[in-house]
Image (cartoon, rainbow, N blue to C red; front, side):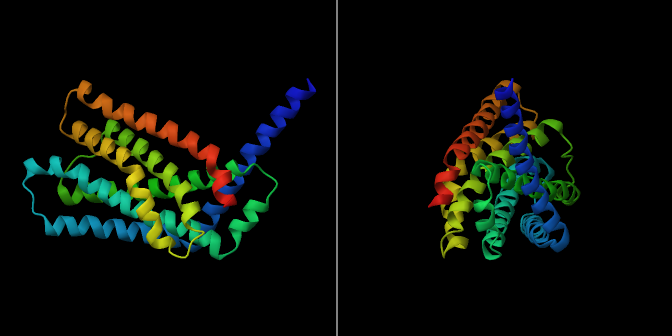
Length: 234
């Protein structure tokens, strides 16, 4: 009974530590609005540039939309990941988190959830803007599921690698160099699945890409959980 109570208490403390980190990030961003605004402005600029630079016929919009959307999400997410960890490092918060008496994987999951929330907020705003500019209906539950799964995989890897890159002097350059080759499978699967749903393709053609997204998310969240302690120690 005592062992079970101790395990439940430890589990509760772990979840509470994750919640505290998420709440800290959200509260800090609510005061400064520095991170979300920079991501949002960048994403909207990319969408506007594509809109004015490429004049597409209605029949071609469904073909190019997945690529444009994921280019926008990818670069805005990269900017957010870099800024998120840089702020922690520059303010000395990262050292304080590492000294906290909690399992360091809780730090990873806290940063992962907060980064995911920031990216989802940007995506929620970008999608209606894109739909208006390109005169498309993007309120597709299956498309939104692809965006969620792709974002989870992207942020899972990005949070891990940004915690590594932030320790270097060339962190702004190093993160994209490390990140994009690793997330290439999830981006490819997300683009293919998004294209399939927008073009009303058969589910048997889309399901392999969906399976890749799910497996990628599970594998890299598990890998990040196991190696985060080693990476921050270095």
